[in-house]
Image (cartoon, rainbow, N blue to C red; front, top):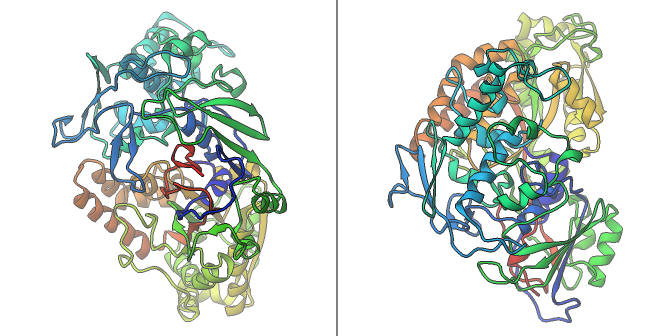
Length: 620
């Protein structure tokens, strides 16, 4: 999941329009003003939209999305999009054949080769920095362990070495294996990676150990972890030399020790001209781009935190596009020469929700009061009770939240799969709606009526800097108190790092969270939330994990064993119905993105998987 704060910067820069005749300043430059901070320029490290947006301009992938579509692809550095029909997807989706484009230049003058493609993908898997995106290549490309996908190369290294954890392989505080057996285990681990790839003439052939339906999405432009870098250049600058007997020395580096952190050499339409960290980044047109030079000469992204400054720059023509929070839209609409997305905007592949913790960690926990059902707290297994969860589902004012808080720029989800993806059905299951009579019914039913008589007291937590989520929590507090004065809820916010720590340790009874698509496939939403091992599901407590292993995991696994879209969609509908009937999550919204720009800019189109602006498509 890309980091939400930088995501919020990117989602409000989407739209399409028709340019109008007017005086155009700086005709060869497009300037974007936003709030995101670039953290890196290394494709293997990046996992936030600000960095991804920069990488998009400089690097290319094997394939790319076809315009606005998230299901259709076009060739890029490969001259074909693999398919079953033409015989380049084989073995029930386990083998993919890519014909590598010839005569493609890297920015330093080197010529693209199949070896560059293989090196780039292998490097992403072994790079595997903590909290990074490498898991998305590890899952399809590394064999399963005990029937479960492997998210990190560390898991296989530990298994082959016969140790409990990856760190047990090394002398403490070093990257030196303790003995020859462990060293050989590390080398054998890399062989599991290298056997995935075959180079045959100008073709790169990928042999997966198991079918993985979203595979093409994981290789498409925008998936920075699959960007193709220049092997010779990377090695010359201190990156992994491509050898099996050294990979662990380049695994999980700190950002400061990553040699490609602030330099680039891609095949994309723009060259990095200048990066002033925390302030701006400038891209210059690469005239030898394989698809032809861009229409503009420069693309600039500036970080401007103050909305008033961004607004004035847009009006004066110093900026061509700016980030505008929904709450400030009224200040922009109606100004001559400025385009604002009409209506609600465009649905982003992003789901915001409130999580119920089925087994709250009560050890020194200030969020659950007395820890008992005595009117001054809640028991740790409070949300294991289905009646309690259903009561809260009917308590929340969904329509008011969308219309009054989001100002109409969003919809109420009916499950974890956002509108726009396979498996989304607006009618199956129905979305929950506010019904205070039903909320009261389920509260009275819970604990054989004791909950209604005694009341409860606990705290809902959201992350600081996100007033929309805080407002959602306050709404729950207000309506709970409205139907029973004995229902006392406090709402607090925590700094992001503290919030994450409290989530991981299971201390939060209810908490808000958002999930943005890593790639446009329902599995990227279903697995994290519904699976017993998911990034969210695994944090909901042992009772949920036990329940999910029986009811959700078999269906989730089945959805990945077929590449038939209809069969997969039917499975995902079943999962959403189960989630609805068991009130697993309180779905707040799927936000809609808006786009604000000068009307003289041409060429913008919306694709939810594009991280921000695509300078190559733009002109004035």
